[in-house]
Amino acid sequence: MSKRDYYDVLGVEKSASADEMKRAYRKLAMKYHPDRNPDDKDAEQKFKELNEAYEVLKDDQKRAAYDRFGHAAFEGGGPGGGGFHGFGGGGAGGFADIFDEMFGEFMGGGRRGGGGRSNTRGADLRYNMEISLEEAFAGKKTTVHVPTSVTCDTCSGSGAKAGTQPKTCTTCGGMGRVRAQQGFFTIERTCPACNGQGKVISDPCPDCGGAGRVRRDKTLEVTIPAGVEDGTRIRLAGEGEAGLRGGPAGDLYIFLSVASHRLFQRDGANIQCRVPIPMTTAALGGSIEVPSIDGGRAKVTIPAGTQTGNQFRLRGKGMSVLRSTARGDMFIQAVVETPMNLTKRQKELLEEFAKENGDDATSPESHGFFKKVKEFFEDLTE
Image 1 (cartoon, rainbow, N blue to C red):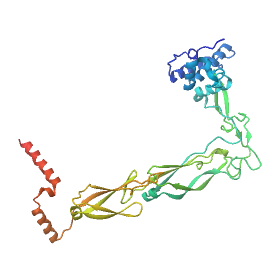
Image 2 (image 1 turned 60 degrees about the horizontal axis):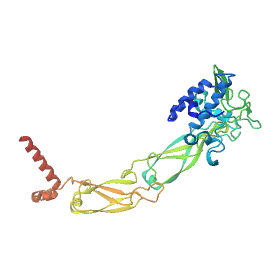
Image 3 (image 1 turned 135 degrees about the vertical axis):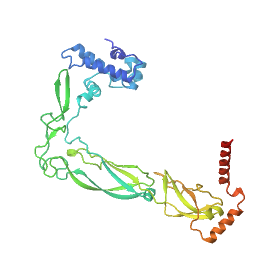
Image 4 (image 1 turned 180 degrees about the vertical axis):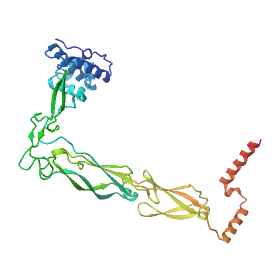
């Protein structure tokens, strides 16, 4: 007997979206599920046919092959002997995987087998570390002390007393899950006897009480690379909390915060530095010496007529760039300082300067501003 078109099986158009096909599958799967139709061979066959159709159409590549070649795409390796293999039979394994995928949230999750060790992963841990801007520039190696849970040395993480072994749970047969019939559905839940471990310990380890882990401070060496920024997260895999009864350990995350600096402000890979300039140096020109983040000094030439807000760029004097040998730039922002606490002679000199300052070219910005103010008030009186 020839196979039905997969789109007809799901009751959707060929242009149906993935969500539309998923909804159609859910509806028909509920209708034809064997638990709702016991001893109904016709319903069982329809459910297998439904499973086969959805398994192909839910995958974009398989769907494209089916749209082009039809059922032949999955028979004998498809056209030309290539293509897809092993997903056209609708066997029991595919049936279970599809149903778990679609209804796993109602069934308490996917199937899980037991084992000699627990599947309970340890918790991830967070460690907050503050570093200076100089340390962010140069990088550093440091040690951290983390209170955590580590594998019990006495029982090697098994949780059982020396000379004994955990036993397979008789309630779930080592699966870690039990099933119960509720109406038309079979509900799967975590085994209450072993808490999903699949094993029970009748004689627990005296040091860890059967948990397979104990509390202890762990000392770790951390390498902070040059160029890290505020908020950078460093992951130390497997250095988090040990898992329950030999389960895999979690990870440790180092969260970095960079302290503010008394001289520099960081802007990505660049550094900003506000430098006060004496009025005479700003007016006549000169040079100043400024510190750099690498501990050196840099000379900056100040041209005559420098104003507050003027910036001077020092290339390659900024922060290190993460995972690179490059460096950002340093920007010097001039702040012209007005003299204070003048002597009598200094005041006389400035007064003489003010009397002789009849040329607006010496203060073009203030002249231009007050000219605009005058025009503004003239406009108001017209």
